[in-house]
View 1 (cartoon, rainbow, N blue to C red):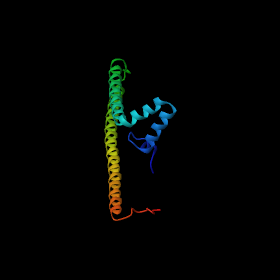
View 2 (cartoon, helix red, strand yellow):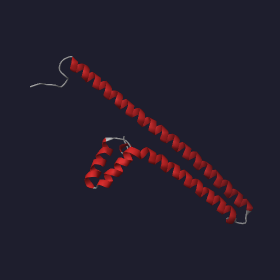
View 3 (cartoon, rainbow, N blue to C red):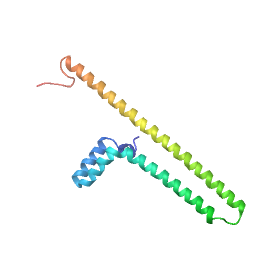
View 4 (cartoon, rainbow, N blue to C red):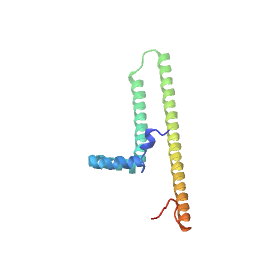
Length: 144
């Protein structure tokens, strides 16, 4: 079953081309935006991922430094436990971000393999049609 994200991946798919044409017909900046998504969508996704990672790191740094300066509860045991838990959660977030990046790479390679398979099938079918055409009539041709 194909999900919506597979239909609108940043590539020259029938759905993205149709949306681009429709965008140009309705309001030209929409068509231009869709064209930019088709051409540069992969780069936007990696840019977004990198920006999110940097923002998360900056927020974690601010939280840790701000807490260290002003966030003491007065209970050393609780402060130590909280600091350890926050570090554990930050490590878990880093691990999940790495797993997501690995999955994104896997999904991209899976799409590439599927596209390659479709292209190979097209070339094979094209060659068969060409071979059948040399032997006389093309299949499905009824003539006058």
